[in-house]
Length: 207
Image (cartoon, rainbow, N blue to C red; front, side):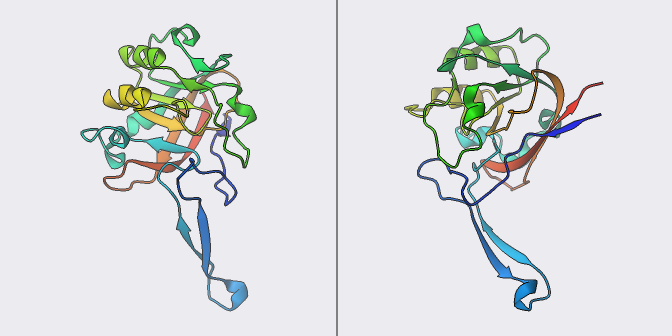
């Protein structure tokens, strides 16, 4: 049974969302410096790299990070390849019957490992977001740092999905993943009351 790590490695040169603070790692204790162990101090945003958006990110009444049920974060997931050149619409969606989780693989794959932030990534359109919530999808993922277009105004897609309690998995690395059904295992840090967190996301073959 094969496991596939779809998590981006967190690095100082990884681009944050424009305006957010970058990732910083400061060495506070080093064996090479005569200390007994190696220890780092980390400074990182809650939506950096591969990360989870809790509904609370955009909805004050939405559930928070530590309230997300584990059975939403773990389970059968469709990796769906989309050839959209701009926005994923309802025409790009598969049959959503019996689909609880979906990860969209797009041409964003050419950007996802870059040190530069790209603003012209493929995003999820509002009509597609509405169709996903109407179908009862519980988790939606995309292979760039936001499911919403870069210039989003009042963020209608986030409000549509978060308002319906959908968990968002952003910044996944699907470059080496073939479309199809997998088991998703994604575990964010359990930060009480938080809006989101970097996470480790893994796919496993379904046998």
